[in-house]
Image (cartoon, rainbow, N blue to C red; front, side, top):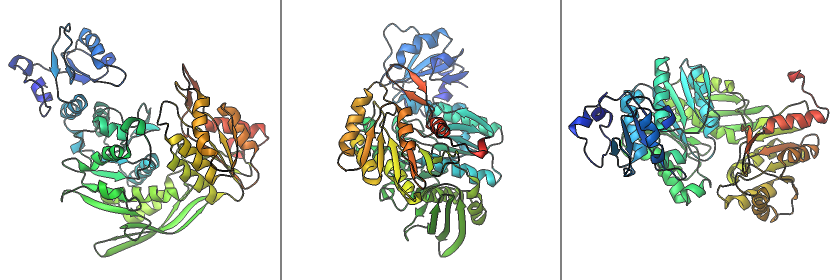
Length: 499
């Protein structure tokens, strides 16, 4: 592909010379370690690292040219193409180079503060049950047909997404489900990608260390729906008032509203929530006609009703059979780290959840409360180098809704764990709830579990599926599920299932 063809649609600060325009491009990269001969290397302006410092390495590996919104360094000897927006340029170029796989693979994008991962797993389940070959890009892992890959980012760079979609297409895949983070939207990682279906879950306080305000945070999420052309279908949460601002303008998009209110097209009724999962009726009323079916799911907690409805809405956007989808919901088992039970035969429930915002923590504790026959024991911590303002709010949520709270450490990063815990303690102490503070997360989990009696629920919140703890100068292996299992076994419990 000629350089002029690759950059067609990219806003350049200066037009290509005829000589440059005719150069043949062999590939493109944003990581200098992966550059090969005749590649175009995209150098980004980063908050911590200036991409220009890798341009010389890319040139040494045979890069044809460097594309960047940054100015060419005075001493750089190679071809430098200055673009208006680096990540948007990469997104356009990637889609062009791989011949627009988004025109043949149906993209589903899910954005919102909470529920993205569970909703993604549910949508994948419904599509696979309908015989589709799918891909999934998300927080826990990437799945390409039957291959599982590690997840370095919830939403990777556009080149990775497009390349992934191209691989999926080569394997006969037709549907790609992606969690789309607010960071990715703000940075332009999904710029120009055509989404068949865009799903909005909810908007609550998070990532203000990056976005600054809730208005800017919401505006970033809105980019998934406000693009031109917009998604063919928008699946929006009727129970969240912010959804009104997400509805695409114009006649190119259709909208499905889901929720518990009568305003929803897709609505849940007669909800029964227990230790074994959920049972409820789902109705879909549109243009005067209606359908009704019963849904059974092993997922725990009423919060998952909303996630199931969002997934059903996405399925409807693809024309999947309503009754078949309702039956297929049961095939989606527990999502890793999302109110995931740890069972060693004990007489109380231990659940691990990724909740790391005050709203997510509140939802998780309310789920625990709905299941508990006794006390709710909540363990939580707050991440370092992240939005400090949510720490006391998380402390308040834990103290207000729990019977006993264990405050601990959760990826302190460069900060002092005790300082982080003190920020959370400000909110925790606004209530008289009994609590202890233990910065060693392993010891804290033991404290929480040894407090439990029959019928209680122990909620281990914050890390979910994560298998590490990020400290100031190194990262260690740590998995709440493994630790909880070890503690339960040390107390004499042992599940017959694990024998």
